[in-house]
Image: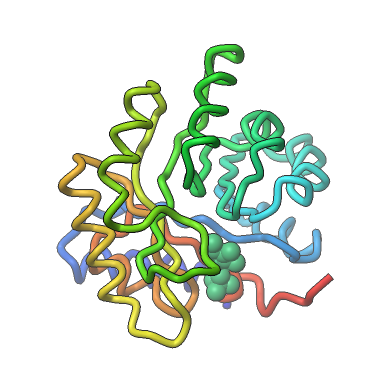
Length: 217
Ligand SMILES: *Cc1c(COP(=O)(O)O)cnc(C)c1O
Protein backbone atom coordinates (compact mmCIF):
# COMPACT_ATOMS: atom_id res chain seq x y z
CA UNK A 1 0.00 0.00 0.00
CA UNK A 2 1.46 3.40 -0.89
CA UNK A 3 2.82 5.41 2.01
CA UNK A 4 0.26 8.09 1.24
CA UNK A 5 -2.62 5.69 1.92
CA UNK A 6 -1.21 4.87 5.35
CA UNK A 7 -0.71 8.52 6.29
CA UNK A 8 -4.28 9.23 5.14
CA UNK A 9 -5.61 6.41 7.30
CA UNK A 10 -3.61 7.71 10.27
CA UNK A 11 -5.02 11.22 9.77
CA UNK A 12 -8.55 9.83 9.64
CA UNK A 13 -8.01 7.75 12.79
CA UNK A 14 -6.67 10.84 14.59
CA UNK A 15 -9.73 12.85 13.53
CA UNK A 16 -12.17 10.05 14.43
CA UNK A 17 -10.63 9.86 17.91
CA UNK A 18 -10.82 13.63 18.35
CA UNK A 19 -7.06 13.84 18.48
CA UNK A 20 -4.83 16.60 17.14
CA UNK A 21 -3.74 16.17 13.53
CA UNK A 22 -0.12 15.06 13.48
CA UNK A 23 -0.11 13.72 17.03
CA UNK A 24 0.77 10.21 15.85
CA UNK A 25 4.25 9.38 14.55
CA UNK A 26 4.43 6.77 11.81
CA UNK A 27 7.43 4.49 12.25
CA UNK A 28 7.93 2.72 8.91
CA UNK A 29 9.29 -0.69 9.89
CA UNK A 30 11.94 -1.47 7.29
CA UNK A 31 13.49 -4.61 8.78
CA UNK A 32 14.41 -7.25 6.19
CA UNK A 33 13.04 -5.11 3.34
CA UNK A 34 15.12 -4.73 0.17
CA UNK A 35 17.02 -1.43 0.00
CA UNK A 36 15.14 -0.37 -3.11
CA UNK A 37 11.82 -0.41 -1.26
CA UNK A 38 13.25 1.53 1.66
CA UNK A 39 14.81 4.07 -0.69
CA UNK A 40 11.48 4.57 -2.45
CA UNK A 41 9.84 5.51 0.88
CA UNK A 42 12.75 7.84 1.69
CA UNK A 43 12.31 9.49 -1.69
CA UNK A 44 8.67 10.16 -0.86
CA UNK A 45 9.99 12.26 2.02
CA UNK A 46 9.44 9.91 4.94
CA UNK A 47 12.22 9.96 7.56
CA UNK A 48 11.08 7.88 10.53
CA UNK A 49 11.97 4.19 10.33
CA UNK A 50 12.01 1.20 12.65
CA UNK A 51 14.43 -1.71 12.74
CA UNK A 52 14.46 -4.69 15.06
CA UNK A 53 18.14 -5.67 14.92
CA UNK A 54 21.10 -3.44 15.69
CA UNK A 55 23.43 -5.24 13.34
CA UNK A 56 21.08 -5.17 10.38
CA UNK A 57 20.37 -1.47 10.94
CA UNK A 58 24.08 -0.65 11.28
CA UNK A 59 24.66 -2.37 7.96
CA UNK A 60 22.18 -0.34 5.96
CA UNK A 61 21.44 3.06 7.52
CA UNK A 62 24.85 4.79 7.34
CA UNK A 63 24.62 4.62 3.53
CA UNK A 64 21.08 6.05 3.50
CA UNK A 65 22.22 8.78 5.89
CA UNK A 66 24.66 10.00 3.24
CA UNK A 67 21.79 10.60 0.84
CA UNK A 68 18.97 11.68 3.14
CA UNK A 69 18.99 14.27 5.94
CA UNK A 70 16.96 14.21 9.10
CA UNK A 71 16.62 10.47 9.64
CA UNK A 72 14.76 9.42 12.77
CA UNK A 73 15.62 5.79 13.52
CA UNK A 74 13.83 3.69 16.12
CA UNK A 75 14.96 0.34 17.51
CA UNK A 76 11.82 -1.73 18.09
CA UNK A 77 13.36 -5.18 18.69
CA UNK A 78 15.07 -6.75 21.69
CA UNK A 79 18.45 -5.32 22.68
CA UNK A 80 21.34 -7.34 24.09
CA UNK A 81 23.30 -5.45 26.72
CA UNK A 82 26.56 -5.81 24.80
CA UNK A 83 25.01 -3.92 21.88
CA UNK A 84 23.81 -0.98 23.94
CA UNK A 85 26.55 1.36 22.80
CA UNK A 86 26.07 0.57 19.12
CA UNK A 87 22.32 1.04 19.54
CA UNK A 88 22.79 4.41 21.24
CA UNK A 89 25.08 5.58 18.45
CA UNK A 90 22.65 4.65 15.69
CA UNK A 91 19.13 5.14 17.02
CA UNK A 92 17.19 8.23 18.07
CA UNK A 93 14.72 6.17 20.08
CA UNK A 94 14.72 2.70 21.60
CA UNK A 95 11.43 0.93 22.33
CA UNK A 96 12.73 -2.19 24.06
CA UNK A 97 13.95 -1.11 27.49
CA UNK A 98 12.83 -4.12 29.50
CA UNK A 99 15.24 -4.98 32.31
CA UNK A 100 17.41 -3.43 35.04
CA UNK A 101 20.69 -4.49 33.46
CA UNK A 102 19.83 -2.63 30.27
CA UNK A 103 18.70 0.44 32.24
CA UNK A 104 22.04 0.48 34.04
CA UNK A 105 23.98 0.19 30.85
CA UNK A 106 22.00 3.05 29.25
CA UNK A 107 22.64 5.18 32.33
CA UNK A 108 26.38 4.51 32.33
CA UNK A 109 26.78 5.16 28.61
CA UNK A 110 24.55 8.25 28.69
CA UNK A 111 26.96 9.74 31.25
CA UNK A 112 29.92 8.93 29.07
CA UNK A 113 28.37 10.03 25.75
CA UNK A 114 26.52 13.04 27.13
CA UNK A 115 23.29 12.04 25.40
CA UNK A 116 20.73 9.28 25.33
CA UNK A 117 18.05 8.26 22.82
CA UNK A 118 14.41 8.58 23.84
CA UNK A 119 13.45 5.42 25.68
CA UNK A 120 10.24 3.40 25.79
CA UNK A 121 9.72 0.71 28.40
CA UNK A 122 8.41 -2.47 26.82
CA UNK A 123 5.54 -4.05 28.74
CA UNK A 124 4.60 -7.69 28.22
CA UNK A 125 0.87 -6.98 28.40
CA UNK A 126 -0.07 -10.55 27.51
CA UNK A 127 2.31 -11.98 30.16
CA UNK A 128 3.68 -14.36 27.54
CA UNK A 129 6.64 -16.46 28.65
CA UNK A 130 8.49 -16.16 25.34
CA UNK A 131 8.03 -12.42 24.97
CA UNK A 132 10.24 -9.60 26.21
CA UNK A 133 8.97 -6.82 28.42
CA UNK A 134 8.32 -6.14 32.07
CA UNK A 135 5.12 -7.58 33.51
CA UNK A 136 2.25 -5.11 33.95
CA UNK A 137 2.50 -5.55 37.73
CA UNK A 138 6.21 -4.61 37.66
CA UNK A 139 5.94 -1.67 35.28
CA UNK A 140 5.44 1.13 37.84
CA UNK A 141 8.48 0.11 39.87
CA UNK A 142 10.62 -0.32 36.78
CA UNK A 143 9.68 3.10 35.40
CA UNK A 144 10.54 4.63 38.78
CA UNK A 145 13.92 2.87 38.78
CA UNK A 146 14.67 4.16 35.27
CA UNK A 147 13.77 7.69 36.31
CA UNK A 148 16.01 7.39 39.36
CA UNK A 149 18.82 6.66 36.88
CA UNK A 150 17.91 9.89 35.03
CA UNK A 151 16.95 8.00 31.89
CA UNK A 152 14.76 9.85 29.37
CA UNK A 153 11.75 7.52 29.54
CA UNK A 154 9.20 8.92 27.09
CA UNK A 155 6.62 6.19 27.11
CA UNK A 156 5.65 2.54 26.98
CA UNK A 157 5.59 -0.03 24.19
CA UNK A 158 3.73 -3.31 23.75
CA UNK A 159 3.35 -6.13 21.25
CA UNK A 160 0.01 -7.84 21.97
CA UNK A 161 -0.25 -11.62 21.62
CA UNK A 162 -1.11 -12.78 18.10
CA UNK A 163 -4.66 -13.83 17.32
CA UNK A 164 -6.32 -11.95 20.15
CA UNK A 165 -8.20 -8.67 20.07
CA UNK A 166 -5.45 -6.13 20.75
CA UNK A 167 -7.70 -3.40 22.14
CA UNK A 168 -7.53 -4.72 25.71
CA UNK A 169 -3.74 -4.67 25.51
CA UNK A 170 -3.67 -1.15 24.10
CA UNK A 171 -6.03 0.03 26.84
CA UNK A 172 -3.92 -1.62 29.52
CA UNK A 173 -0.75 0.01 28.20
CA UNK A 174 -2.48 3.40 28.11
CA UNK A 175 -3.64 2.97 31.69
CA UNK A 176 -0.15 2.09 32.95
CA UNK A 177 1.31 5.06 31.05
CA UNK A 178 -1.28 7.48 32.43
CA UNK A 179 -0.71 6.51 36.05
CA UNK A 180 3.04 6.98 35.54
CA UNK A 181 2.69 10.35 33.83
CA UNK A 182 4.09 9.06 30.55
CA UNK A 183 2.84 10.51 27.26
CA UNK A 184 4.37 8.16 24.72
CA UNK A 185 2.49 5.03 23.63
CA UNK A 186 4.23 2.85 21.06
CA UNK A 187 1.51 0.45 19.94
CA UNK A 188 -0.25 -0.65 16.78
CA UNK A 189 1.11 -2.43 13.71
CA UNK A 190 -0.11 -3.01 10.13
CA UNK A 191 -3.25 -4.88 11.12
CA UNK A 192 -4.38 -2.74 14.03
CA UNK A 193 -2.85 0.74 13.99
CA UNK A 194 -6.20 2.50 13.71
CA UNK A 195 -7.48 0.79 16.85
CA UNK A 196 -4.24 1.72 18.61
CA UNK A 197 -4.70 5.37 17.60
CA UNK A 198 -8.27 5.30 18.96
CA UNK A 199 -6.79 4.16 22.27
CA UNK A 200 -4.06 6.80 22.40
CA UNK A 201 -1.06 5.54 20.42
CA UNK A 202 1.55 8.25 19.80
CA UNK A 203 3.83 5.96 17.75
CA UNK A 204 2.54 3.27 15.39
CA UNK A 205 4.96 0.70 13.97
CA UNK A 206 3.83 -0.23 10.48
CA UNK A 207 5.87 -2.55 8.28
CA UNK A 208 4.21 -4.86 5.80
CA UNK A 209 1.29 -2.52 5.04
CA UNK A 210 3.81 -0.02 3.64
CA UNK A 211 6.54 -2.19 2.18
CA UNK A 212 4.67 -5.38 1.33
CA UNK A 213 5.23 -8.76 2.90
CA UNK A 214 8.67 -9.34 4.33
CA UNK A 215 10.73 -11.83 2.35
CA UNK A 216 12.84 -13.67 4.95
CA UNK A 217 16.56 -13.26 4.33
C1 LIG B 1 8.04 -6.20 12.57
C2 LIG B 1 7.48 -5.39 13.67
C3 LIG B 1 6.44 -4.49 13.45
C4 LIG B 1 5.76 -4.28 12.10
O1 LIG B 1 4.90 -5.34 11.83
P1 LIG B 1 3.90 -5.29 10.58
O2 LIG B 1 2.85 -6.26 10.95
O3 LIG B 1 4.69 -5.68 9.38
O4 LIG B 1 3.37 -3.91 10.49
C5 LIG B 1 6.00 -3.72 14.52
N1 LIG B 1 6.55 -3.86 15.75
C6 LIG B 1 7.56 -4.72 16.00
C7 LIG B 1 8.13 -4.79 17.37
C8 LIG B 1 8.05 -5.51 14.98
O5 LIG B 1 9.05 -6.38 15.24
